[in-house]
Amino acid sequence: MPQRIAVLSDVHGVLPALEAVLAEPEVAEADLVVVTGDLAAGPQPAQVLDRLAALGDRGLLVRGNADRDLVTIAGGGEPPEGTPPVDLWAAAQLSDSHVATLAALPHPIVLTLDGGGDVLFCHGTPRDDNEVVLVDTRLSRWHEVLADVADSVRTVVCGHTHVPFARLVDRRWVVNSGSVGMPYGSTGLPWALLSAAGVQLRTTPVDAGALADEVIAASAFPEVAEWAETYVRRPLSDTVAVTAFAPRDGRDAGWDD
Image 1 (cartoon, helix red, strand yellow):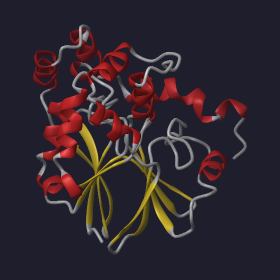
Image 2 (cartoon, one colour):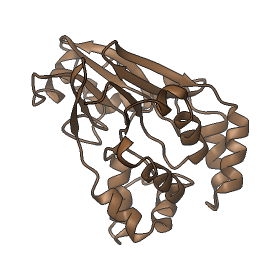
Image 3 (tube, helix red, strand yellow):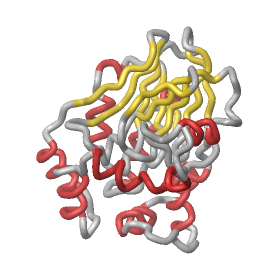
């Protein structure tokens, strides 16, 4: 039973960002490193999957919607509407072993944290890896997406929207650790630490310019310079991200609480 769990999410194929967070002493010393989806859809897909595999039994990977999409594309299936060019490219870089790894990812996963009770790890929500919930999503929507979660689960950890937050929903903590590879709004690389002491949102400081240069130098993605400029060197603000995601959390149906 782990006593400390480091949570990373949405690495999106950015190896130097992943390495920076894994090098954090509290991540290196954690009993378990859980990555809550969207592992490889980005400029260094194979390298990131290989690095995560090197964690061995200390690493636990959860499926994200982009992971599922890469499996579909790599298998010759129709890409979902609006699939980013980097995802199409990334799928073509994966070996059969990489694709098999992504295809076998579970969603969701429940673990028992020593002194902290049961914790559910998912990507979008427990019921859907592509569903959007935000820090300001109305309570009735939260109750809906958490309706089938066992009462024993007192903490739900998700990803998907790239913006870190921690909030209570009817006495249950809901946490988003943010995105390691495509951080929105953060001045560094966000992650989270879970222990009996509670939930701690953390940030690894980085030189965004140097990180972007490293990604550009290491990736063969034809549009990597533009990609890195948008998502690494000058990442989007949390305001832009939340505003863009907001229509997808059901709020247009009306606020009733």
